[in-house]
Length: 117
Length: 113
Image (cartoon, rainbow over all chains, first blue to last red; front, side, top):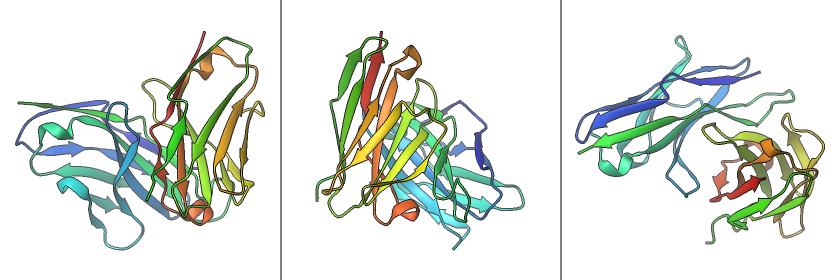
C-alpha cells in the first residue's frame, strides 16, 4: 500500500520569501508523484508531476519539486512567494505497478499556505 | 475545449435519503474518477469508471455506486445517507484508464442533516 505524509498542516510566509512545503511518501512500487493546488471554491489544479524522468521537476507558477528516493521525499519549493499562492496544497502518490491499488491517487492531508504582505 | 463540470454545486439532504451527483468529463476523455473530500482532509478515492465499467474502487461501502454513460459522463449515487457522508465530492476525468493524468472539476458540496 502507498501513503503520503505532509509534514506541515499550515505554513506561513511573507510575500517575496521562499516557500517550502514538505512531503514524504511510502510506496511498495515505483511511484508517480504529484503536487496539486486547491483554491477556495475551485477544483484541484495540477502544479507538477514526477514520473521517473528527471528528479528535479519544474511546474507552473514558478514551483518546483525534487524527488529524493533515498529520503522518500518530494518537497515543493518556490523561490519567492506571491499573494496569489495562498491556497491549500496536496502531495499525491500514484503507484504504477500491479495490485489492487494500481493507478489510484492517494492524497496527503494537505498544507495550507498563507502569504503575508 | 470544455473542462470537467459537476452538478449540482451544493446539495442538502437528510439522513437516510439517497443522492445522485453528476459529472461531465473533459472533451476526449474516457475515464472518470470520483473522490470524497471531508472537511480538513485530503480527497479519498471512491472509484473509477473506464469505458462504462468500474475500473478500481477505494474503501467505500456498496451504498456508494456509480455509472458511466456512452458519452463518458458519470453519476455517483449514495444510498442511505449518513451524517459522515457530508463532504465535497470531486470528479476527475482522464484519458486511458488508471494511468492517465486526471483533471478535476469544482466539486459538489453535500451536506447531510
